[in-house]
Image (tube, rainbow, N blue to C red; front, side, top):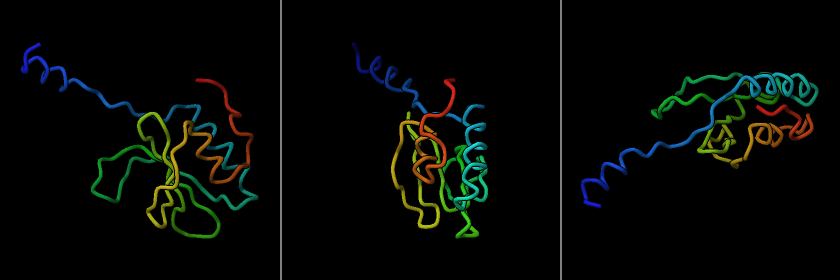
Length: 116
């Protein structure tokens, strides 16, 4: 294979990224409602970004203890990154969106969602 053919091949690499599906939105609403007694206040799925990073659809979660969003969950490759939004510090990456929510507040059985 020539060098030109190798370059053409490498330019066609597409990065994989999870996206928010209707089941994620439904699970988020159930999780938020179930967690109201544990200090969960609100959540929003948005693509607005205050930083210079490219806009990526993500979830912001508010808790009773703070007026600013406390957590962000965003797709990261084939996983979901949980970020301490107040300190702008990544906490962990999870294999599922549900597991990331469970790490914030374990109010629903982990994996209690229908398959896509």
